[in-house]
Length: 629
Image (cartoon, one colour):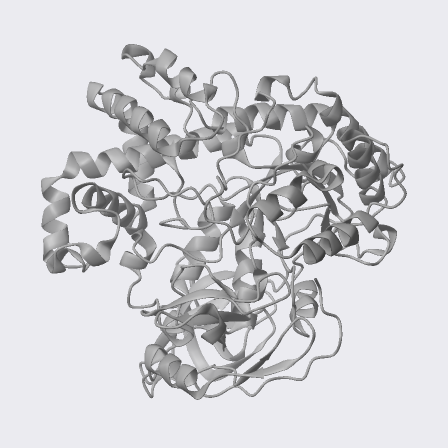
């Protein structure tokens, strides 16, 4: 739940570690000295001259911390600044040089994310892997996203929100959770529609075997990837006109080369770079260069997959805003962790402290970026992750946006309850998000659910980042919610309306021992109260309609509906705290092709579209949010 009481600021040391933390009840807890000592060892001591080398992040008109300097701008021009940036200074990533020979990055941001004035829209929240059709090969793909986009446009929706599409290791044992990718810069080939791959019509694509994978009750990523990879390799080996791919690859530069090389290495040595031969653990070492040269076709194959994904994603999102989800981190053995191992903390992972939902705290398994090392790297790991996730679709949802301010670090030798908060240069990070949003003309939503310390939402509002409001969490009537927000009923981690209404979600929580009967009943009763007046004998469809009628009264910029609610799915996509449940593997019970005619889908669309009607001058068509000239 959201905490709104004033919160005292904790004491933060020179390493950025908070000495204490507040729980959801505003009770203060002191961090163990052993934890602080361990985290200081992990963070290390920055070099004495770091302050003179870290990027300057500023806005046009700002005073600078340096006097006379030359700035080599992105576009090649050189401009001189004297103590402040002129109001007409170009936005972007520049190099600043002082007369004494020092050089550092200058990042000039507009300070606010891009958002068309007066624009409001409703849209569908989609777990793409679950949204599979008759021609999908066991998992929802970019062809299905194209179908959902068409559905949304026909219904007058203005956006589609999708789960993270980032890539995992290309090996057997596919990671099910889209929130633990190997990279936040490249996408998962599982989402490719094979029939749309150039050259697929010239080889045996095993279409019958592919379609048969959709007959199962669960999504079997290993089986899907084994077949898709075999067919994709066959198409690649058959050879096609590669000029368009090669031209695209050349423009991607070193990041794509790193990713494709890591994939080829993972094929041979496994998905965790820590277990590779020592000489291959250095991404800039001679052994890695020799490997890439010797296995150039294998490397090219993985780069080619990313080109296909780029082409298919752009086709699937044409004409509508697709809000892509940015996970809080990456797998410790993955490609980003390999490429940026000098920036990531070793021996700790990101998680959450104990709270009302989990008395033991949470460990999400991702290694955090060390704040001072991130600055020393010119913020490049963060810049690339934000830019890549926004690319080509028009929107970004930042998962756990509070992580731009502070993250809960969990030492590997302790439990999640033994962690502490470490602070980040949030003003710089928010300005970078604003700059990338401005360049991509992409709206930005920050997932600020849970315990949120004072100042976070104020900083989000200042930077034009939409907040997140959930019917399940908010005590205020939706009609009183702020305009600068995305409004929704539920999320992938919380009960669906049908599951809550019928008690199926409660029964599943009991099955997995997620609380006492009293605790679980109390939680369900609390959520049911947020539906308002619904006759007790009403079916789940009536409860869904009631929930979205309440949501439709919100004046928020974006109104979001889940397909799970619309098709009366009782199971939530993910149930935190469970390990023996098929999380992230539950397909929707309705094929993609039948969504348009589904009465629940039609009902929810009609309710939300009607909710936008009073604002007659606002854009509510299915077209992408209007771009600036």
